[in-house]
Length: 392
Picture 1: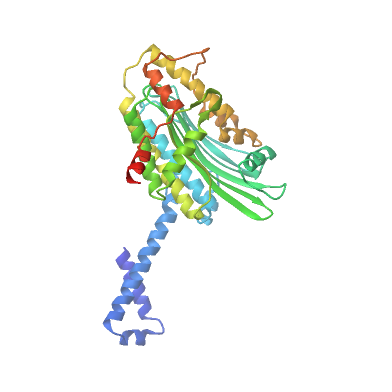
Picture 2: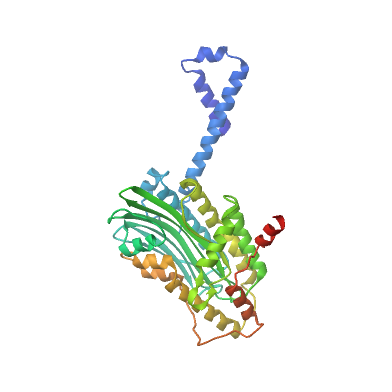
């Protein structure tokens, strides 16, 4: 195909006004022209493929996009379009990967919703499966005026907006998977894009992350999970993994209990460097790393044996998950502060079952105690600090 296009383009060159001059040139010049046209065609095809990567996925999504298709096609270069199509694709790929691990009759319920102020979302929930007790994978594409409470929350972390009327756009994909078997960890991921317009123009940034919450510690699983995320980060900046791993450990802290929610992963916010397209490419790589980081762990442990004791411990740890999400999670707070918020989708992250037990303490040297020691003292799973010390 590329050869035919190049040949046709060269023939066109041969018939323009400068045909005689071109014909009289040395053969090398003709060859250079062919190579040049061929290279331009190749680069253009690459660009077209990159632009159409998400557009061509329409038939595979869980539902119709929130933004009308004709509007998306007209604005292919707009970051709002690129982000919406990316999160639609990630949602569909992850939902189908999860369904493959389930019994045939366990499928996601797809709920497409809209909001009067602007935009909407697609909530996909699978409940009471044999493998997944509750699995939720959401996308939201919303716009409107930034609520004062949400604007204040952003100002507390350094965002400066000039003006009272603050039009905003936000698009993101978010998932929380609560497995039935306590030997399979819970995973959470969220990748999002914001635009806020004030008197000085548009401010934009990306945020997100992926983290793992096991009920029983498997060090091999934790290493696999972190290594997969590191590979995604390293493709863009070698410093990202270490920075965002620490950020994750610090963010997912249940402060009133002095423990982390899980074994971490990566987390970042307010990413607006080095440029918009590079930042988007980085976020896309992280989102695409979710399936290879998690599905092998599901396949490895979904049929592991467990009993009543392990189930009760799982329910207690889910109680901690609820505490973090309702008290500390910024995404949950932003959703609850947004006018016409859809609470069913916002609270999708909560488990189907959880438990609180007064003054519970795991037995010393037990598997449960082993997990708690890591939750209180985050570990360098890839031993990067030791490697750095040896090479310094």
